[in-house]
Length: 308
Ligand SMILES: Cc1cc2nc3c(=O)[nH]c(=O)nc-3n(C[C@H](O)[C@H](O)[C@H](O)COP(=O)(O)OP(=O)(O)OC[C@H]3O[C@@H](n4cnc5c(N)ncnc54)[C@H](O)[C@@H]3O)c2cc1C
Image (cartoon, rainbow, N blue to C red; front, side, top):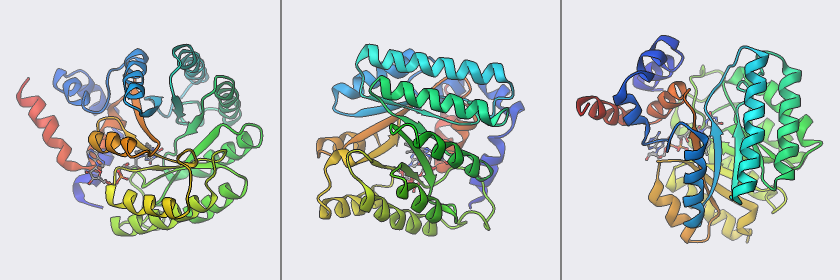
């Protein structure tokens, strides 16, 4: 892992820095590149314009590691309202949640009940619930909750990280129960005994895992490739075409503001593409993870500072 990435991922955990950064107008200008606005209305408006351009979307409220039941319950209630709004506006939009935002650190049972309720409401409102994956020490609990919910609700999928050494085993167990996976490379700082330290190993692992997902993909068990790596996506698309998979059986998900032209170009070619749109005021740790993925993004921050 590069020094810049390590420093940025450490900084992403600082509450002092988060507080300082959030108050600066240059920071709010810089963040616009990765999110349309802090309120859910801006996210759903962006989802509507993606829909007009032939792209689907996924929305997520920023926030993680809540420390009280009240906060966790507020997050669940918020997502229930978001699902209602998606139905009311007729948007082709899924919802993605982080389990520590729904109280995983506070009460695992409460978190599980919330995911169950949200997955049921997602199914009732004609959409789908995705579960993000966080640091490696949350993976066991996340997959335990996913499996319990998946046994009762089919419109739920879970994210897996290709950089984790354990992921081939986790993927096999999820595909066995007919689950849907969103495969990503992985965004956190992890020790080398847990995650590949070299990007080339992560990229190779991603393609190997993607091939297994394509073997399992079908319209009622869609598999998702969450990456902006266009060379990797070319190889995955070639395999999908060779297997004659329909586009509903697999999708490409990318983040708002990254590879935007490629998102539109893939959709124009008939690939099912969704843009993941984040919103909320607690954007600091998430934003710094985006900087860490591409330290050159720091130039945008510096430029926003200079022009303030
Ligand atoms: C839909 C989606 C959901 C995700 N959910 C999770 C999750 O739940 N848990 C988790 O750990 N991680 C998650 N991630 C983040 C993921 O783990 C990676 O950190 C991130 O996607 C960067 O890796 P990459 O696959 O795009 O490949 P890379 O090889 O890192 O990037 C490929 C190319 O994409 C462009 N690019 C990538 N990142 C950026 C950026 N930040 N800014 C500008 N350009 C960029 C660059 O051109 C780069 O060369 C998610 C990513 C996506 C797309």
